[in-house]
Structure formats: structure tokens, C-alpha cells
Image (cartoon, rainbow, N blue to C red):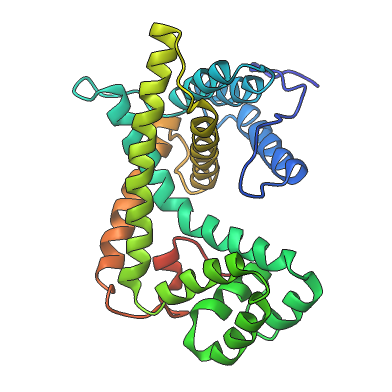
Length: 293
């Protein structure tokens, strides 16, 4: 591949994926986005290399059989991707601040996506025949969300519940989202509870990273921590890719993550103003943080 003043891309990343990420489709997505960034003059060379190096290091982490090496390498990839702290902020505080903003941006989208895949696994054709009764949306994920959340589609929602009843876990995941949609404050609660857990887990991972680096004495929790850290890195990556398209030309990567933080702070404040309402087609884009199509 022709090199253009930056990092040469010669292989797709092969990350350890969790929560139903498709190896082929997600790798192709990341590779395509990475190509766009590396070969697009909208970013300075240093930023293009920073993103490419973070992704490459992340992918290379799982070439090692050592869980300790995997954890410390993925942590370094996350550190390299996110903005450096200001002189008044500690590194872990800065990482948590930006990582939680990315979680706010992506968590509900991922929740619905995971629930969609759960339902799909029970019987694709039957599942699609139910949600395809919802008019006005091109995307089946949007049809699924409308079925679960919008009161005008209660009859279809009941049919979906009967379909999901063959799997208690699928029923639970769908009902959790359906119940939260009855009052937007419950949707906010889902986000807040998740962010609290991520905050705690990131601090655990940081302590484990320091234990490995400074004491060479990993705890028995390394494998679980890697799974969580892997997901946190991918959410930050997805959030960054999503926000780059909205960022004004000339914005650097630190500016993109700052934009994510400001957008999510504003969005959550606006969602709070409708906290007593139910989720509707009119407020869904604001509350969910993404557009139904």
C-alpha cells in the first residue's frame, strides 16, 4: 500500500472482542476508519500517527499469551488515544473523565444493539417478521427500539415479548429497556449506574496495571479486567470515530474528545429537563444520543 507521510497500514487489527462484536465486520470498520484518518489531511501528522499507533498497539496486545502484557499494553493504547491531563489533573482522573463521556455517548446504543442480537439469535425470520410491522423506519435496529419503547406500538411489543419468552435472559434484557422507556429518568439511571461501575473498574484496572509494572505481581483478576478494559477502549474508539464527522475542520484529536465531553454534558442536562416524560419518537434522538433511521 502506498505510504503517505504517515503510518503504513498492512494488516487489519484483530482485537479480543466481547459482547457479540463480529470479527470481520468490526475489523473492517476499524480498518476503514483508520485509513480515512491516516490519509486525510484534516489532522496533523502527529495526530494521525497517534491514532494509528494506538490501534496498532491495541491489536498487537493480543499477540501475547501473557494476560499481564495484554492488560498493560491495552492500557497504554487507551492512554495514548485519550488527551493528556492538564497540569492540575492526575492521569487516572483525566482518563476517567474522557472515558465516561464516551460511555455516555455509546452505552444506550450498545445496550439496544446487544438486545437486538439476543432476539435475533432466537429466530431471525420470526424476529424480523415481528419488528417489520413497525412503519416509518428503514433500520431494523430502529424498528426494534420503537417496538420496545414507544407506547403506540404496544401490540407489537407484546408479540415481541411472547417471542422472547423462550429465553429468560433475552426477556430480561428486553424488559429492562422497555420498562426504562416508561420514564426517562429511568433511562438516565441506566447511564448513571453504568458510569459509576466503569469509574470503579477503571480505577481497579489502573491499580492492577501499577501492580504489574512496579511489582511484577499480577492478581488473579487480570483476565476479567482485560475484558472490561478491552470494551472501554473500543467504546472510546467508536466514540471518537463518530465525533470526527461532526468536528469542525482543524480540530485536533484532543479537541474531538473535548467535543464529546461537552456534547454529553449538554445532552444529559437537556435529558434531565424531560426526566418525567416517557420515551417518544419526538424525544428519542435526544434521550438515546443517536438518530433512529
